[in-house]
View 1 (cartoon, rainbow, N blue to C red):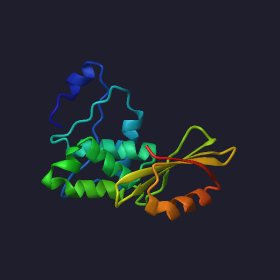
View 2: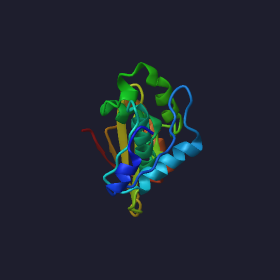
View 3: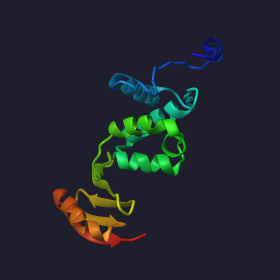
View 4: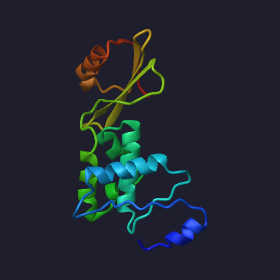
Length: 174
């Protein structure tokens, strides 16, 4: 590492170094798990550092996606929305971007964990229109609202509602 670890520790900072290789080699599952766990448990504010910003951006997006239950499509959209270097303007970043997306669920309907047992939440994604559709349901009443549906995905949406045992009560376009 090209930083002054002892100086940081003397200043009261907790310092950990984790190997998170970039192209042409990629992080192993153990390396990816170690960085996600470190981001989870280390105190805030938290500083992540690499020479180019590529690996740290991918590591942070991996942690965020895994901790929030994002699908690969959702993570890619977020990476583009916030202009992460690995998703927008880096010619050599393709392998890291593809590696990251391969670590996440590839399907369009991803249950997002919720601390509210009575809340049912699903995010769906339409690749053609780049539209996110949301299903919010009540575990107790089994009633649901569908937010921003895509007309051509009506069968998909109704199938998801049926699989979840929900009765559609409202549809909202924003």
